Length: 203
Image (cartoon, rainbow, N blue to C red; front, side, top):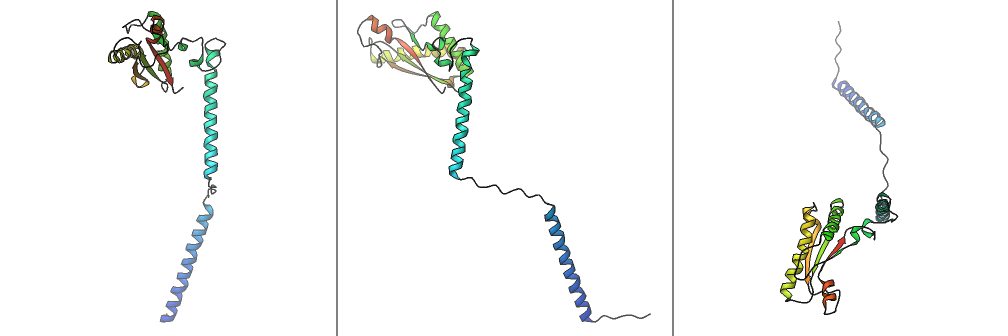
């Protein structure tokens, strides 16, 4: 039996050859793995101008959808009016001014029924808010009239809250005698100035 002795040169050469082969093997595995991957296409960057145009288009589409929804009101109610419910002149919601007697914050039964319709509308439209403005005639002191205007607005507010309207949808303010709608100094003018007004927003 003959033993072959490798010199130092032969061993170094074989190690280098094996090292190169191993390196090529690693490169081949890497290339194959890349070939098997699925690459997603690179998306083009959207310019600020295009992004603004897209946002405007989406907003316009949303407004059109909301408008179409509002247009269904007349048909659903069986009437001929087409448009927003709050704009229907034949709806109880068209009445938004409520009048009071002298030194009184009591509402009539008829007004209570109309305010109940407003309560139903507000409950069904949680994004809509209303400001209740309390007013008085010119008689009495400024302080008294501010307090009386507030009592009148609160009387209306209480009816809305009792019927399920969240307090976050209702705000009250009293102007007392400061914003008359009739400028005369007689009972006909005073009667028109003793009032609470509904001011809607968000619809």
